[in-house]
Image 1 (cartoon, rainbow, N blue to C red):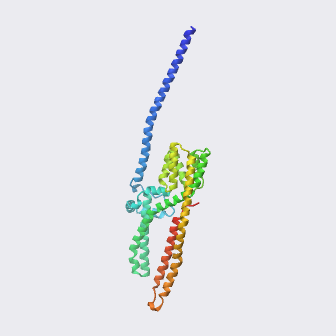
Image 2: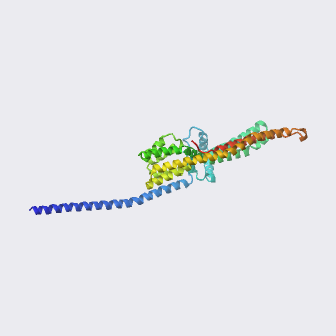
Image 3: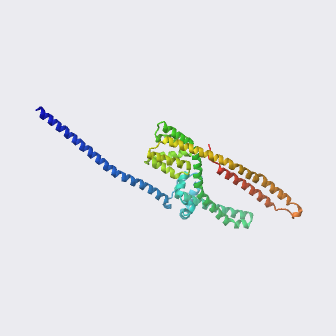
Length: 364
């Protein structure tokens, strides 16, 4: 009897183990099938997101959905009201502006410049400002010609209006690019400090998300704003790699490009993130010091040119004007020569200062 009970107990244990093994096998098979199904769907969704981003960037502007009625105050309120009053012809003009070579890639430029307007709204406001500028110059020259009784000024009203329109169009096409470059310079200025803070916190055991949030909450200017946008994208469902790649596509900072590329690569391969960020911070600091050294060498030559334009040229113009007043030169130079000479010298000084400012490297 005891032997039969022992055999029965052994059979029950073996049966239960067999059931457990079969259940484990079934669960493993089910999990593998779900992983196989999930992997293609995740790849398809990633491809779909990338394709939708490319299509959104390359899509033609749809001016039927343009709405600038929310702009009630500020300097853009006047062109917004003007656009609302003449929406039909201004839409046609804005569509023509979108075909200009300088307006290609405008959607990415607006994102890089931190301009929150849509491409349709920006083009519509640009068309409105261009028309307002053209009409303003036309009316100004026409009224001056009538008030002064000068037919030449009145005749120049149409060319002045066309010139004002063209200048406004050129300014609208250049403005996003210049603003994006300025933001990139601001990012490069604070990038080494932000990277060292990020690397220190990761080395101390803080997660990458919390370290990134700490940098975003610190006052690093434009860089903190960009990191806040990254955190907002992550909160909206994007993965860390996708949110960082989105920042990579919109920034113009070469240093931040390098940082984001290495961070995404380290997140995918599991590298030493803190050491990588520290090395990049050292490289950015070294490159900045080299640019400062090169700038100081160029500054010596720029100083010589500036002294020649600001000191030698006015003295030469004054001496030439005095010499030409001698009677043997038949009455000397006309007065407008002196005015034009000093106006040209002033313009040259302003250009030298502007070029020097643009050549100035990012420093801390």
